[in-house]
Image (cartoon, rainbow, N blue to C red; front, side, top):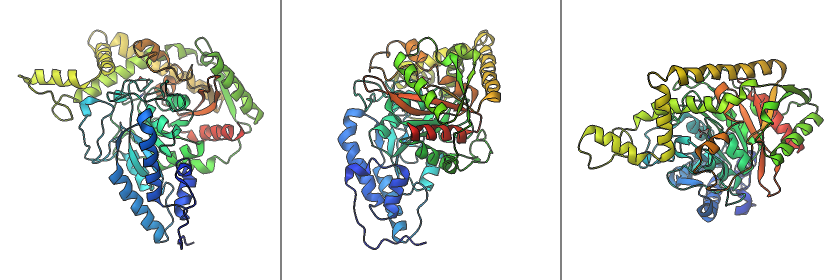
Length: 491
Ligand code: GLN
């Protein structure tokens, strides 16, 4: 088959270009309805116009993007068939390193850091033809639920600028919701892909732990960190997962498990799939409008032929304290490397080495990061290790067993993604505990290492998006993608 373009016919206007899904954007380039260069430029115009009020991007990588676009256009001109992301403009959360492009993790301590290598997930996106527009704002070191902990500036929710986009991948969710990227990559340690996806009305997928290489992901809590896509549709999320998943020799925790064709799997019917509904996820603290939307979504899945089964995940109430001990303990260890010697910011005018360490960390880290380092150091300290860290690891096993038991009876579990819709900027910023409690429905999957997806399932009276979370068995992203796709098509 040949793909020669005789006469390019530019049949899109700029506004339409930025609303395209992956397949539509790729085909438009392949069929010469536009060029990869025009497409990238349309996105940059959109970013220039709208991002000043949203704040999703921290750094634009125009040179790199346009070089890639030119390469894609040349391939089209030669009659080549484009790879799955050929010419598709994407954004990357600023916790994934990009060679030659500033990467800050939302922190002043990495304010001037230019990485010498590429994160595997980013490299795989580019190898599949993606055009990387730039780096997306996030909570500092991915610690937060609102993106207000970014050292640079907060992100505003495109659906209501007075509200947060969720966090910590708030920039990644907002960029997709505001048509400033076709898809983006985010990271999820306790909910940071799924919760912002639900707040901004987009799809967010956290794969199984080990499914996607963490090489080049700036570490927050290594046993909990995952990379995954935020997208306009479930199909787009499936395309991205198929691109970035699979064993990577550079990350020994990446799993050598075959990667199915997630896109082909979407075609399978949802009829007969057994779905668990756990009372622990529909209890106290759940906003009544969110509850109504989730219950309606469960009914919708039942009407599509899914079997609804009541299950119990009895240890759910311990998930938040467990997560905040494990995550802070690992963070305190991971963040020890930022000492002013090897990376980023170094305080000037220190008289001794230890003063240089202390001042660099004092000036470089923000309040939330310092809070987590202190909590984690305490939980790991001699005398408290058994009482906190070891105990938390034991409870983590109990939480995992809850899921293992449940998955003997069901194929997937459906819950709300977040107890509320997007809250106001400033509403919880001075109350870290209230912020932590917002993660109640998401941290469990990270602790157990199972995959989860958030798909839009309605709106509140104030027109704020609500997210439905679907959790699956280890390495069974195919089933949750299929259910989310079936729901999305029927809704
Ligand atoms: N909100 C959670 C936290 O603050 C989760 C963050 C994340 O998933 N990166 O730790």
